[in-house]
Length: 306
Image (cartoon, rainbow, N blue to C red; front, side, top):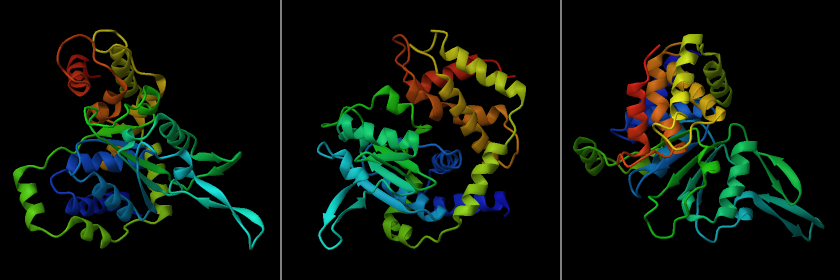
């Protein structure tokens, strides 16, 4: 398998459906290749669901979508055992969480109890139903969408759950040319249904192994540690990054390097993924008026390159 050619084909196909969002699509693919989970934080109607469905189709993965609401129960996600008279036994009926790509739509509309049930699945790659632990399919990739917190009926995700997402991105509104292409083009949902699968499960596993094999030299790791130390200095953020977040930065940077056609991580790869990988884990300090993403970029500019 020519990894670079495969990755190029994957990105090209996704860009035909989601127009004008090449950087965000690359982040999504990097997140999947790195074995993480993705949070898309945006207003309704900008293509979050279409992107998730297109990603699953292109990668040849089983897709499931759950609309999160305030009355959604954990069992609605994981499934239940129902007594079947003909078999004289309780038979487990798997819920939508047993999918390789799970779209958790409007996750912050669900109650904290349901959010925590998803948290176990994301972290442990398994669910416990009625005392029995059941493994989830491999790979297991959660794409959660979140509405702005000022919208009615939203519950803020706790810090512990935000930390389980490898990346958080925002699609934003399309530019004028991309929006014109949407207005005059084919229906995007119909386009997604016609997308061919470009990868087998074995090929995806090989690509994920390629990410792990990307080399991160000692000076590069020193740079990552300098950035982590900067988040803990108190100058930029109220609390610094955890070691788990540092591991996430390296994994995301390795995936970015592979997508850029290299078998080693460069400082550019770290800088390209850092805002998406750490901003959702941090709270800016002071009254600068900058959000977490802008504060991360300001910190990046202040920390010297190796």
